[in-house]
Length: 380
Ligand code: ADP
Ligand code: MG
Image (cartoon, rainbow, N blue to C red; front, side):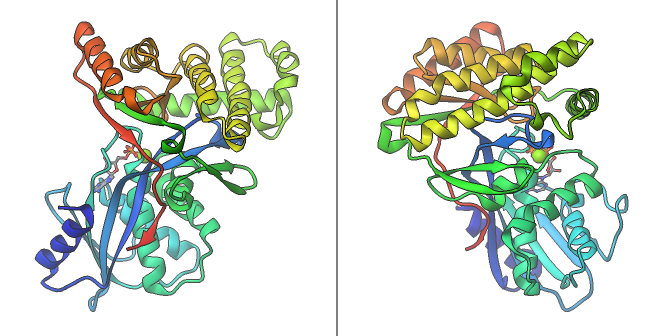
């Protein structure tokens, strides 16, 4: 059964009536541009076919009730403040709160959620959930809320209500991506450009390799990287590391005493440039040629930003050894997924090579599938 039909069936089962509509929002992979979002830099995500669907109807009773096929119990809440609701339902209560904070009169609603975005794998199931609910409530309430303002409200739910200090990448991708395109986002101006990303036409494919590695220390390490970048920007006297161009990198590094901080800065500055270079190549229809940039991004995350783990490094190495044009970890790090750019007819060999490498290392088996660039949040 599709995610949409199971959300609809779940609504019917739990509430005894049909939903007013179905709203979908996808998970995402970031093609390149990691940890650049909170440095006011550039990112280039695309949306996955995996999505979260919210079946929603206005409620006659006050407040909100939400079921998820990934949770045992429904959760009901009235108007809340950060801290009132914990666990998975905080993402939903956070969206209601964030809309209310922005001045919207959010209609009481019944919600049933179904999703096939893997949770906690760096494919942004959290943003898919927030974006589906935000889009549904915006439509039901008839809010005048332009699409470019929506990611910020979903991000606020995650930052200030759930308490996860993430940047604007995930929600922007889930809300603003388009089918067949990668989303070139300037995280300072929030301007976007839809970049053609037609892998099939080039005879190429992207494999997503979920390392299935247990996430460890993610929140603490993420916060530490963020602090380090902010501290470096302060020392360098710039508003954000985005303001250090790659030509100014050597000068900037010479002005920093701390070796760790120097490496963090080098990752962000070179990563921003790699996003710009990737966009140039895609605009020129040279998809295959982005491979080395992907691999360089991985090396930078591994050696300078230090956010990879053995499982993702092994997946990258095995994919490259099997002939991939490029491969990198995608997402915040410390586990999660790797993407590999390959010839479309090499998917089986590449998959087998990665599976073999994992078995040799004694790692839990990876999950591997080809990705296509799918649509962003929408009413179905
Ligand atoms: P990621 O966004 O990479 O998948 P996060 O830790 O940011 O990982 O978000 C995962 C959390 O989001 C889950 O632990 C759960 O609390 C919540 N979540 C996401 N999707 C759903 C869903 N469909 N139903 C219930 N909770 C969900
Ligand atoms: Mg998330």
